[in-house]
Image 1 (tube, rainbow, N blue to C red):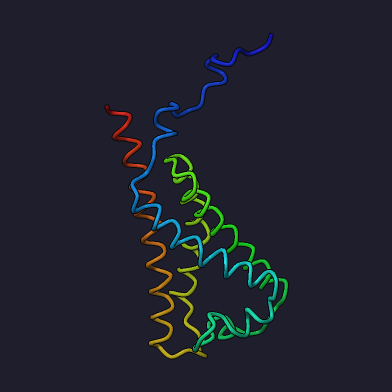
Image 2: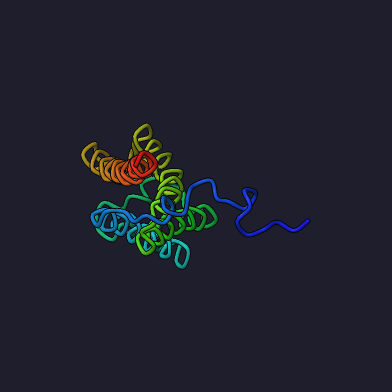
Length: 163
């Protein structure tokens, strides 16, 4: 028996009105701020892992080489994670649908939250305390921004369901 296009078995869990609703303009800016640096950094690590390891972020202090030794496979894999997180955020910024933003922020947080926690609990001997704090704070700001975007999109979905 063929399923009909509007049958309950084919219906999305979220109504089309809720899933296609748009996010506020500031969240698009936040998504680009989260996405672009990760996408570019990830591309750098994928294309030139040794350069990325030796030079990231491009000015002093070099944050990646503060955690030796270099491992090309690990650097490329880390780059792929950064690239994927950045791509998720930029796709959400381009589409601006709440359901896309929610899924994208869950994916971004799955990468950046453990990354941030690692740096919080594993300061590098090659960095000063101030450099460690600045690096971890920048990651923490990214987590906070991603949580804010996720919370806003989720709350709007709840508000839409009530109306």
